Length: 208
Image (cartoon, rainbow, N blue to C red; front, side, top):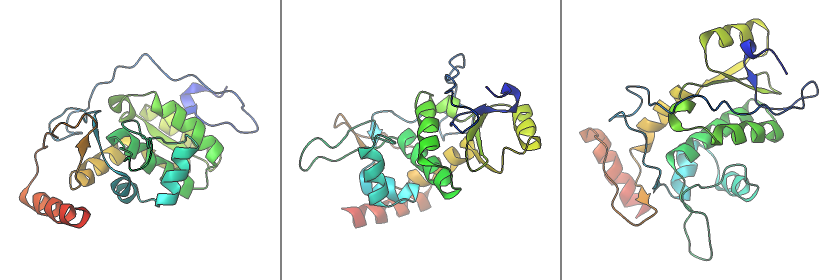
């Protein structure tokens, strides 16, 4: 096991085949300003496949393959028969964006899968405290400035993802898209400005 002060390795490489257990002693508190009303997204509110692809910047083929291989599966509703619509939650789409960025840096699907399994066990509030780094082989989790500095000084971190930054980016873009609840209920609208409202209307017309 590598020194924990240098970040927690989430993938496996030739020098470390152990899978560290997730940190479970952290509470899932929401950082102020992370969401418009300082509350986590409703876990029953989801987005259909075309929207998930567009927001995450991936193709339908990628999304479908990742779902079939259990890399990133829709946590709200899976495809269960002809005509059913998969629904991806806010957190699902966040993970899709992270997977896309890690793939773009050359990290293997094997190591990404280990990292995703770790991230999936964390709440949205905990995820916002994490910065992911990669040296192109292994993915490291850092939760403090000291870990980031030590990792960079050790040469392991050549690419970083501040999950809170990705989350804020997603919060801003996802508000433009129509959502639906798994239980068929209405979706409570988050505060938005007039420009965002107009964009939402245009998107609804295109999708509808």
